[in-house]
Image (cartoon, rainbow, N blue to C red):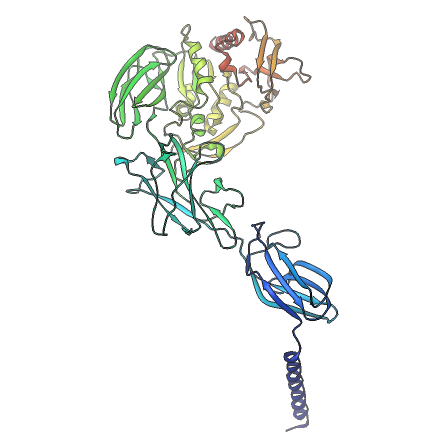
Length: 597
């Protein structure tokens, strides 16, 4: 062995021996910190439950206690440089959050105790598992076959609704029924518990012993895990302490439907047959056909088949109601009928906007599929709430009845029909277009057609508010990709948000003669929508403003766009006041005359 090798060997012996004796001293040294209790798991999302840490020092010292992650990095300091006696038991609480109050990532953490006088740090062997992931229960309604969409109740033979629940444990699972067609899901009732994970749940379609009212419902499962995390199968119905999580989508939707109708969504020609689809859940029904606002029946009959074949009445254009009765259940469906000949004014019904707000569950997840909620919405489906569109009785119906007394001649269509390639020609051949009701949603093709129509000298009378500011694409009969609301409407006007307070309106300008025939006062309206700017290149011709307003922004306004003309009412109650307010009736008739000439 060379001299150098002998030196290296000697050094290795010394180092090994030193490490051995150091290890022996550590093994024989007394314990510095005694662990009494350490909670094994905690969730950072359950405020009332925290990890408890109880320790005691073997000798007096100044201690700093921190929570460290798997890399030894401190995430939370629980105690700093505190003087502790050896006979004092210290209890500390940790909520699973760092020094900034943020939830720490799920994983294992330990307690580190720093002893200042001894110059030592001790990491306790006990681990605290942080688990902030809530349970993810999934509800799926069971049905025969592979039909898409929600389960329709009542079922054939009176069978109850059966459903399975995954990702939840029967001992801690709770089952509920929610109604979902309001602004937020609303708790309805508690459902019976399951006794085992393999047992399906059941609902007999009753609430407090009575058959559930028609509407969309969701069966909801809730569960709580060992650290207190709460999860729900319907994120929109999450309660206190429940956090929506990503995971498999529940299909716990049940649509209770006793009688529903689906009419044609484009105009039918007078004298020709058309079909109304009826869902009476296999029962027979009676049907009646009458013109909107009239008591006289045009036709009546009975049936049982889902496809009800009728013939459109002969006569001038208008809207007819198909009314159905089955037992104690009633439904109705508006049908636009195009009369003979061609006329100067085209009246447009907002079918797309009706369906965009139609609270019907299409895909079976229990939530209504409406564009208003940012979801996809099918156009061909029955209207909820008895078949009459939301707001129809206070918006479109008063106008249609006013035009019937005395009979005004016009053509009638729907915005869905105008979205077709032939829709451009349908608009262009009319001197005026009346947008009845609230046309909240337009498709990009229809938006462009209206803009070109005004640019070429067309005239538009819009009776809606908060309208013509949103777009959605129509693909394969489905409305999707909603955009808006924009500050400007389709004609470039900047509109203020609807202000809800009682106001009186007074005519300020009338170069167009829009207010001719009235006294210029519009009293007692509870809300209004002001036009802040008429749009690029537009000129204000006639206005009525809020009486006593400092801004003088027009509410009822007519603006010229070159040779084109746009008239807005700006009052949500316009249709409702059409029945009893003579100034409202006279202005509506005057606007009709301006579009007709």
